[in-house]
Length: 359
Ligand SMILES: CCCCCCCCCCCCC/C=C/C(=O)SCCNC(=O)CCNC(=O)[C@H](O)C(C)(C)COP(=O)(O)OP(=O)(O)OC[C@H]1O[C@@H](n2cnc3c(N)ncnc32)[C@H](O)[C@@H]1OP(=O)(O)O
Image 1 (cartoon, helix red, strand yellow):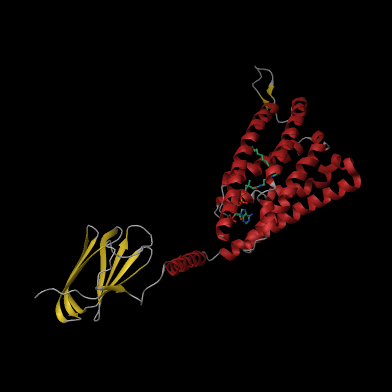
Image 2 (tube, helix red, strand yellow; image 1 turned 30 degrees about the horizontal axis):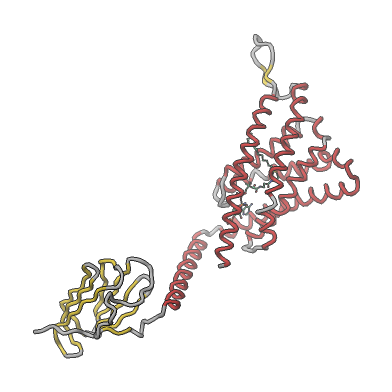
């Protein structure tokens, strides 16, 4: 029996080629790709009745050797994967289309429609994976509620500090510099004690960010607040307290409302921009103000011998706390460098994702 050529219909997507071979009740199928040529052989009912049918097609561009096929009562469907995700101008290497080959208008899409189909598929997959991730965490509402309340309390605390200091600055002018600590310290103590949650939250996986930058930030501030200002009365009426507290609170009145909005999946563009930009001048200024406070405290610690470490009697003197402060000054700029890099990365990540979403 001489083999005949069946009618073959084709269509493509960016990653695949679909072939429909018009043979019903196909049997003894032998389909494969060798050296980029698809060979088909099989028996069945085609245009010229029951017969042996065969054809070969040399593809325009490289395809993967694995071929998937499925025969139904009416036809044989073949799927071949392209090596590269690209759109082909035609199916075969030879420019003239073989006579037995025609477009499969049931599956036919032009390039832009195929791209749209691909995008819709990707969006569907993304949506399903986001939904399943969201569904996986039964405590999500509780966690978001907790974070929202935490951020709200911090926002109220720092807003009180900021407004209070600003009003006092307007009314008293430079005189307000000298008693900042006595008016503000209690609320600042409360906010900074609470800020320890900022280290705990990423450590227990409540927020997706690094523990180290938060640790540097919270411990650095608490050191200044409790050790430098809190333990030395002579430091408490120095103007540097004003600058440290004002710089801390200025950044926080933007950061906490930004977090509050993320807890309720809302975004205000201006607030996001401020959260990820205003630290650029404020962080170095804040660390500079803290460094001034540390430097000013060194002679006071030396004089009062407060927190100095007593050494064995034979040596006859104690190790002044000022040595630790000098070491801390070095750590401070190291901490500034680590957090500056971290915040730059967060800024780039935030604005890059935004840009990509906008495209
Ligand atoms: C004994 C001492 C040892 C320590 C020694 C170290 C020496 C210390 C030296 C350094 C001293 C620094 C002291 C500080 C000085 C100042 O503060 S100066 C004033 C200016 N300050 C600033 O500008 C810093 C402000 N602080 C911060 O930005 C943060 O605290 C940070 C930790 C530095 C960075 O924040 P991070 O959380 O990593 O980045 P984000 O992009 O904001 O968040 C990431 C994602 O996490 C979500 N998220 C985070 N927190 C919350 C929250 N509370 N609630 C809800 N969600 C939160 C956030 O939304 C992000 O999620 P996505 O939106 O999905 O990305």
